[in-house]
Image (cartoon, rainbow, N blue to C red):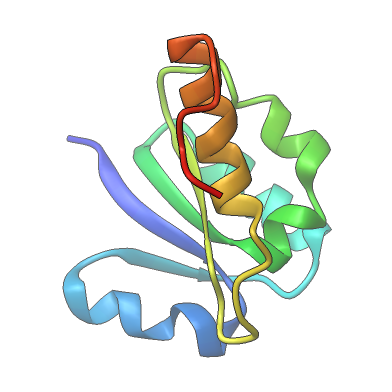
Length: 103
């Protein structure tokens, strides 16, 4: 059975453990990449804070076309950087053929 996990700084991801997600703490892109590679086979979905994801975009590209894990950027305690919304916009545009999401 696949699991759900979340990677990011402690303040941003600690609460996810209360709803049953596996929580992994990482402060740098290198730490985040190492954790992601370690858990990739066993996790269907991995949420990662936008701040951390922006530090490891090259590593995340490796998982872009994989069936699992789905790597989904989420805002952290420092706020929304817009990375997650940009990714969703790109996926919608690819699927539909044009950008149909409002700005």
